[in-house]
Amino acid sequence: MDSAQLRQLIRDLPDYPAPGVTFRDITPLLADAGGFSAAIDALAEPFIGAVDVVAGVEARGFMFAAPVAHRLGVGFVPIRKPNKLPRATHCQSYELEYGTDVLEIHQDAISAGARCLLIDDVLATGGTAEAACSLIEKSGGDLVALSVLLELDVLGGRAKLGERTVHAVMNYRS
Image 1 (cartoon, rainbow, N blue to C red):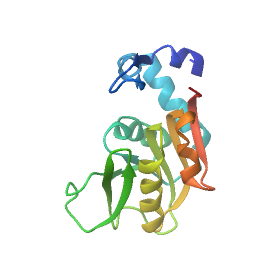
Image 2: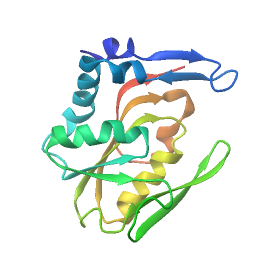
Image 3: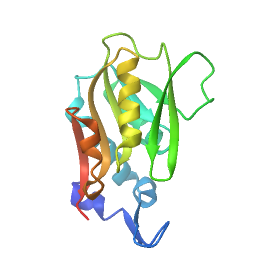
Image 4: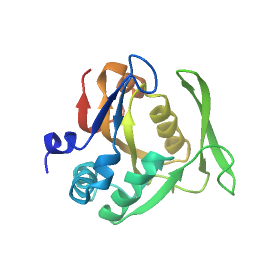
């Protein structure tokens, strides 16, 4: 299944959650066994043999990161919202359209020098992605790339990531 076929499994919801916003609903893709498997393959394939661990951002990133880690035969590291991890953490705050938020990772989750792939569902404004990348680097990991199902180009998130490598299965230019 190619990216055009995957795109047909994503529902566009105009004016949600606010007027002028088009929400990209991935739940039909998740519900389609062939589409979900193809999405996991597309996220993972460029990184076969190139990573030691996969990290995923809570919550929708978990839906893709854990199966990508399984497909690549490596472990999975969760990057979570505050106060959900039981041991010492690194924390990173980031800007949202409507305020700030924080992400955390266990301080010992990634071995020094481990090649890490970061997975998330969407790259939009880049705040969450930049914070998650920073946490991996703060942990001593070597960030190989950020791999996302959808990149919303019009929101310019890639620019916040500097020279970091970004792999997007699908790009939305509007």
